[in-house]
Length: 240
Image (cartoon, rainbow, N blue to C red; front, side, top):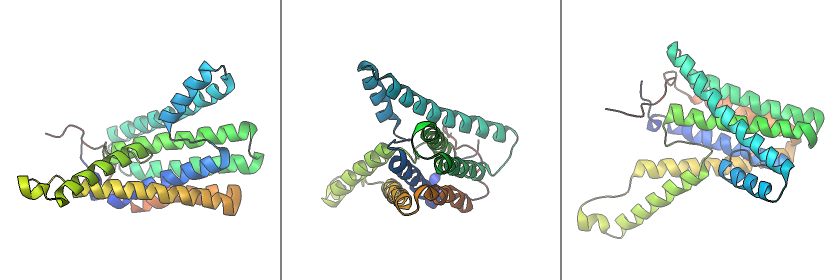
């Protein structure tokens, strides 16, 4: 399989993190549900089950299943297109993501918040986040999961620690520079992108209501315009 390292398209990775933040931001603002934090949702489900809150647990389970389905669908779609030697996979997946976000906004615009419409919107957003996470890790590199802020902050913190060590003279003493500037810049840009996206997502809902979903939906489509034409195969996870 061809390798397409994320370093070749840092703007795409940062923009996808911004998209993830925007989708999550508008989703939380509109429904009160974090559609990408599967660790937290899983923990909440266990708590709800222990306290006999079946409805809340069911919603959490459905959210996890939708996120998983998005990742499964992404993996299947990529495999089929690779088998046919088709290109433009990342672009088409980003357009699908935009369609899902717009559909969530449409459901809330037509039927209002609460009830089945809100439930459907949450599942659509979770599916979109599962798809995007699988898309970024498969086509931009396993270390890039644009909805996984924990990983971004962990990598960023580790590299800041290495940088402090080097600045304090550790690199001069042992002749080895520990800081990975590429990883530091990548982690920082992903984290910053997610933060800006979350602020933007919550803001457009405040200013334009459910119509803000259509603005957020345009973000992954814009990301598709940044993608190089040759990015359409999964990255090589086991290089020689």
